[in-house]
Amino acid sequence: MAKLLILAGVVLVGLGLVLMTGFPLGRLPGDFVVRRGSFTFYFPLGTSILASLFLTLLFTFLRR
Image (cartoon, rainbow, N blue to C red):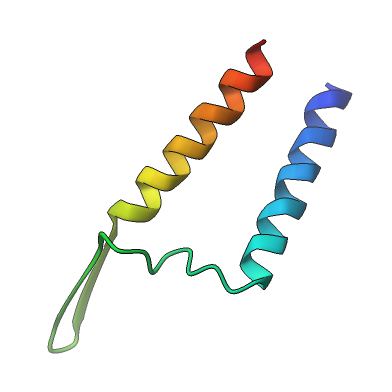
């Protein structure tokens, strides 16, 4: 349990550092925004694919 908490902290610090550098997480190519009048629909497809790839690699590395 302690290793998992340490790993979660390291991941959060890493994500914070990436966001501080200006990485456009949430505004990647492939993120769709539809605006019609007062209605806005946002579908973060590119961001979801990137997060899925990152988590897959992370959990594959942790399993070994």
